[in-house]
Length: 43
Length: 341
Image (tube, rainbow over all chains, first blue to last red; front, side, top):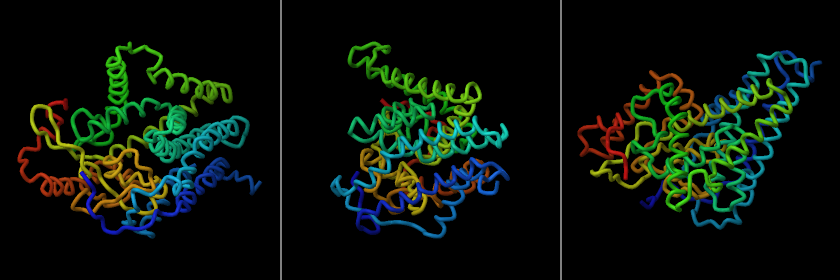
C-alpha cells in the first residue's frame, strides 16, 4: 500500500533535536552515579 | 537513582505536552548524503553505550559512597536507558544495508543480552506481524504482565526456529557456523566476561540487572506498538498484506526525538529500511493513533485496568472503521485463526 497524501509535507527535520535529546542522557547518568546525598560537588 | 527513568519517561512525557505533535512528512526520496548527521547519532551511540555501562560499572565497584541497593537501582536505571535508547538505535541499525551498521546493532543487543531480538524482529515480526505467528503482537485483552513472560520464551524459540529454517533451505545444519546465534553467543559471553573482570560476581549481577530492565523496556514498547491489532484472515492460512493500520502511530514530537521516530511505526512496517528522519506519519483514516507518546503509553501499560480503559474503545473504533464486515472477533482475540503459511 502506498501512503496517501499526509497532512503536511516539509523538509527533512533538523538532526539537532535528536542530538539534544540524547545530550540529556550523559547528564542524567552523571548525576545518578553520585548517589543520594553524596553529590561530588557537595563534598 | 530515579533520574534515568525520570528522564526517559516523565521528562519526555512533559515535553510532548509542551511541544505538541509533528505531522510533517519529509520527502522519502531525500538523498542519503543529506542525512549525514542523523546517521552519525546512531553510529556514535554504540561506543557511548559501552563506555557508559562498563565505565559506570568500574566506578561503582571502586567507589564507596554507593550502597549495594543504590548501585543496583543505578543499573536498573541504566537498563531503562539502554532499553530506550540502545535497543531503539540497534533497531534502526539492524534494518540498514551496510554490514557495519548491522554489526553495531549486534554489539548493542549483546550489551543487553538480547541478541536474538535481531533474528526474531527481521525474520518473524516483520513477516508475521498482527497474525497468530508473531509473538510480539500483543493480543486484545492480554495484560503486559502476561505478555512479558510469554514473549521472553516465544521470541527465543521463534528466532532460533527461523534461523534453522533459513539454514535448512540452504541445506545447512542448524549448527553451521553461519548461524548468527554463534555470533550472538560470542558477543554476549564477551560482555559477560568483561563485567566479571571489572566487578567479579557483583559486576555480573549489576550487568544482568541492566540487561533485564533494558529487555523489560523493549518489550513494554513492543507491547504498545501493535496491541490488539490484527490482519484479516482471508482463509486457508492466508492473510492480507501489512498496512499502516496494523501498527499504532504516534506523532508526539519530543518522544519522537528521543526514540528517533520509532513512533512513526506504521510507516516503519511499510518501508522497514527507510532511515528514521524520512519516516512518514499518517492521518487517522489510514493508521490508528495513540492518544499519547510511548513514554506515557508504556507507563500506562503497567496499570492494566487503566490501559484497557484507554485502549479498548479505540480498538473497537478501529475494528468498526477498517473491518466492518468482520462480525466474530473471537478467533482474532485469542489468536485462534490458522497460522499463516
